[in-house]
Image 1 (cartoon, rainbow, N blue to C red):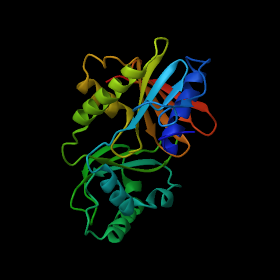
Image 2 (image 1 turned 90 degrees about the vertical axis):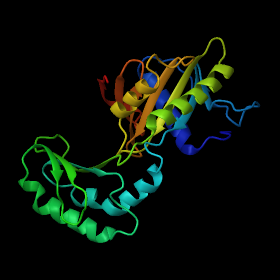
Image 3 (image 1 turned 180 degrees about the vertical axis):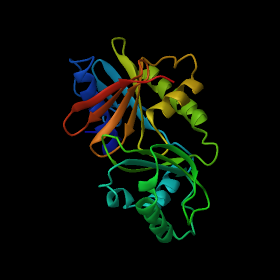
Image 4 (image 1 turned 30 degrees about the vertical axis):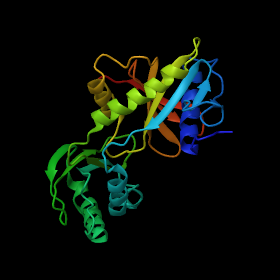
Length: 263
């Protein structure tokens, strides 16, 4: 039984357990799903000896899901359309660029024309305040002709105060309290925080927000990990304590690459 767990939560916990088995905990056991499956009130999601694991998803902004859905209606299909370009192009725009009532199809056509006609003429580097016909706000553009993975990536930045630090503070304290109540003497408590927002969130953004919320660390939690779900197959996993960042292939159960970040 998996109790109250959603498939996505289970998948993310299993992926982290697989990563821990490859790195520092080769003897870690398979997860036992206890939330809703084992008698008790408000239990954490799982036990994977030696860890007691709690998972939650954090939104980048209060309107993340709504704005994200509108954004995808605007740029949907463009990444695939320009998959064969010979350079890497990152296009960043305000997160409310795709407002309700706008002609998203016409704007998508204008953006595609700009990528096709203007982007190839840009020099490598960061281009600020780039105007694309059909849009009221200017964009930021990054181009790299030597990138190992060419293609077009779309990102957003918050158009207003996101409140991320305060939401993170409240959610982490609530989940840390649950772990503290149910942790056994021989267990390590582990908090897994997840985001699937590839436009507004990344490991650096999360780590900066967490350290702002908890400058002296989170009391009562032995380990905090951040899972940034990029695709159905791959996630970035950040060990907050060490700064180790892994790109993990969920299907193959392998580490694609690893680096260390600081904020």
